[in-house]
Length: 372
Image (cartoon, rainbow, N blue to C red; front, side, top):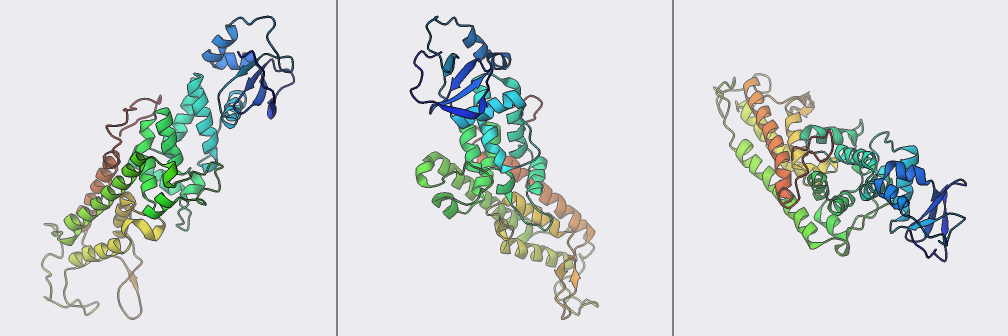
């Protein structure tokens, strides 16, 4: 406990209990008049601190001893609210991040394990380590009409990366770096000032607020993802062989006429693969859906093309149809895309160089699997 009371003290409007018996003083000087028993009950740090005998002539504030801390007043307010009222999350919301970060910082510092675990579980929910959970996360940020609005539901990834580096939480770093890399280079470098109205901690993404290491990781990971898609297109679509069980194998270029459309007899499976290739090239990286350099999403779109029925058949009346691909080729290609998505997801830590340079966090959150 400090023996020199601050000259000017701003009283917290939220935590200044008339029956409080200790005052916590943050930096800058904001006072929180709370209860020693509540702090000591949940924190061994405060319990030990309050057991230290104090001199009888110790200065008081409002009749109470005080403890001068070096914590941010907003973090301390969130921490005290969690201690008194608990911490609850109704669903994904970017505006929750200041509370999550503040409570996590101080619950880690003052050894309040149950609050720390709740915050870590929330972070792992929003920045998962499995592809299934990532798909769930992305679906939650997509409206029924297909509008993708991640910043309404999740904080800006640079905030999460900074928190992960500050508190050594490597398990959330790959997903956060991947999310950040989906922005275009200009946005990453120049800064994004209006992406997160729901969160009161908007990051400044200019060069001055980013370390060179973070920039290098972001751009290297972004390029790795783009190369991955380019390699997939070349390997699996440009010269893709037909299935051995292809029902259209006997139809070759220029062989016969299709009775339904009058086109030359181009193998429908080859034609479908070519059509998929053109669509991926047109919307590479998911730009058409508001995503930039997002190979995991691009491969999801690729798989969804196999079951879509809203393609034009090229006729004058503009009838809608699906791909004319046989069942065998469709099944083999669908499995191929699924494997490619899983491999892309597992490659993300390596793309951003966080697989070895960050300490492994397997099992760091009780009951949480961290398969990176």
